[in-house]
Image 1 (cartoon, one colour):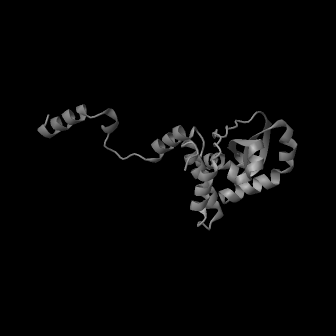
Image 2 (image 1 turned 180 degrees about the horizontal axis):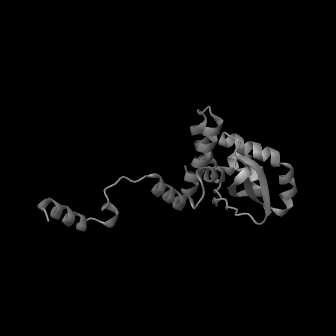
Image 3 (image 1 turned 180 degrees about the vertical axis):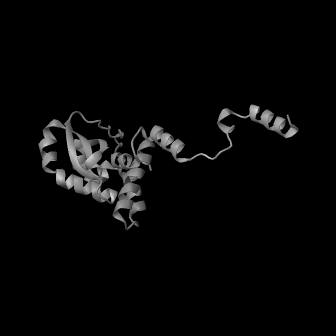
Length: 178
């Protein structure tokens, strides 16, 4: 054995088995497997539809139905995908009537005609509880006047209301004394 070959073999023996081969490999396969693990087998399109569902269809519809999965067509229907929705039982008929609008909104969100039809499944929805907010203690008159005086110079209504709520929370924890 030559000295060069012996060095190569001893170096390869210390390396992990994944690094021992010296040819290039495609990056797509490991990335695809990693993406499947991270997304739970869902494609990026499906994940974005599920995450942004309330902004896609609106608050009223999203309270009564949720996307379950997006199934791509096969064979002759390769371009058409079916969006499966879990729907509250009493709202199923209304969602059925709204199918064209929902399909249009989803396709507009995605930027292309990805969804061709909806499949409705009646069931219970996974509703997220709204975060609990403690009731603010009412402020006494001097503290309320001091807070209003500090907010009087703010022209933006939304900012003034937000700062008013913040001031009530802070002054309320101090016992309502300004």
